Figure 1 (cartoon, one colour):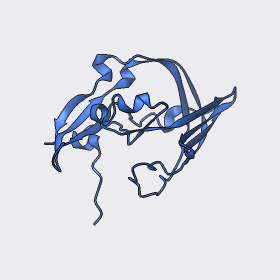
Figure 2 (tube, rainbow, N blue to C red):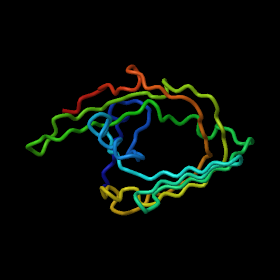
Figure 3 (cartoon, one colour):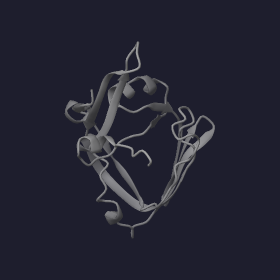
Figure 4 (cartoon, rainbow, N blue to C red):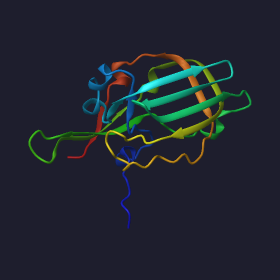
Length: 179
């Protein structure tokens, strides 16, 4: 019988999202607020964003290897009903800090934060999208070299707005200790 992955939200019996890996555009962002603060690893990436009146193309590269690409065609006939029931916030992560000398953990907590509460949305643009995902785990080998499979693309949503990270919503809180 296969091992079932336990998602952080399952451990606290709540609905929400999580990050497996966050790609950042500059080396300075790698060290600040990484796994120890947020519970997920960061990796350097080169991000390209080409937007026009009719859509956009975004590419994320791990150095010279394209790991993610999305092509969006803006389309006023699309509505968000296919995905509006899905919850990506609040975010739940397992923050694991290994022992300096030993094989266990000093910290093993489920943490949460809800950055959506700090979003000031100015515009939402919907459309259709094509998504391709390459090998996303080049540095850490989590998926053993296998790419994630895109099963279905429900649509595309581009949010334009301001984001302010407040202490109330931008800082993770411990909701359960696993030690």
